[in-house]
Length: 115
DNA sequence: CCTCTGACCGACA
DNA sequence: ATGTCGGCCAGAG
Image (cartoon, rainbow, N blue to C red; front, side, top):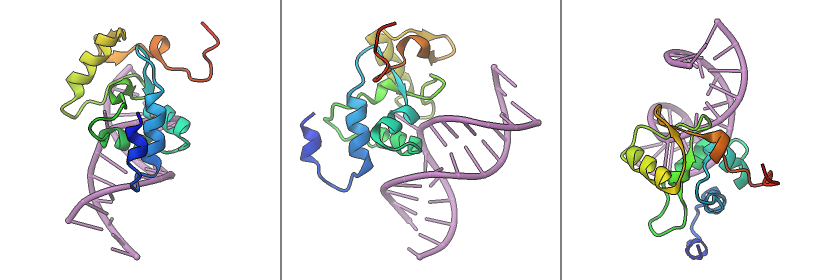
């Protein structure tokens, strides 16, 4: 958390993305594009994902709660399986297809007026 | 400085 | 429903 301020390197937009990601509660997931938008980067979807991958060790950034816009996890890296376990461990419902129930766990930071 | 790639997203066939 | 194309931002060679 506070470690964020500790690193004042030229992270730039990364920092904002990390802060936004840290706002994600348990049992909730969001897409890179949405996260980037909250971070102030309307078109920084890729930058957001890149930042997630570059998450420094020791940070409070739950990159495992960040998935694709379709709810599918980022397949192609070593954390693919790990991420899935973490989401399930948090109580996130997933389909056998390997996708998250966006309609149920889609984090809505502004539309939290109850459902 | 230029070019390529990358945990992406949205649109179209 | 899936597969392909272009666009966006940032880092590394």
